[in-house]
Image (cartoon, rainbow, N blue to C red):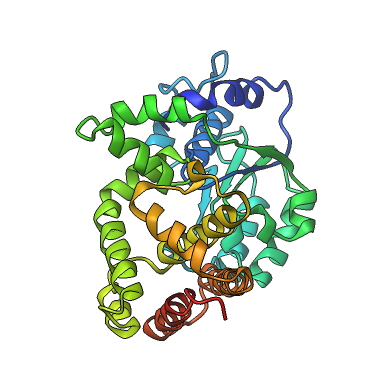
Length: 328
């Protein structure tokens, strides 16, 4: 059974309590808040042969087949490799599943995640199934970045926003999920995960706090001219590119905010506060705005899976970062 998260209770009642289901739902919201689990829970409920008040029973033939991964009326579409695109051939296979008759005499349920990983041809191939799904078919689309979806796909679905849980609820859940971490570490992980509790757990598993410490130390050495952009770019080889761009984007925003407000409470995590303050005082606003624009543009390329030369890209970022102090 898919895990049920406490922050999804009211959302679940709303979805599962519908007297009639739409033919397509778009569950969207930040990554790391359990949208996939919510979709799997809804899928199980829709396929169950004797659903209770809302949840699947877990015991009927349909539930047992689903748990075994061999339900004939269930189809999951995702990239063949992590972080790759969903291709048009994969969607064509899905479309041929959608036009078949249900083998168990009930609904057919399709789960697609993440929808934004479909390339344009794949997205267009899906549109017909969204317009007129055959028989009693329900499509569950999960998206972390709905802004990247075709408007025609969004307009054919019932859109369900999945909000971030409150900080208090996330920390309460993290206390059980990460019992060996201190309160302070859990707050830091949740901050680094932009408030997404499941992302916080996965960041902890990949050693994000150690990675962050390495990058922060490198940035300080760069500004003191103790290490060159090239040395740092090569030394950060194991750190995900998106994570690096997220941090630098965040830092440039914090610098701008401090330049405008001089509010010391808004300096972000403790590890970079002094650096943020120093750069805010020593850099021109134009320079910060320019580097932020550049970072956002490169981040989009990383998200779009562009074929980038990682070391050259990081060097370009660090050369610009090193030149921030000095108001000329």
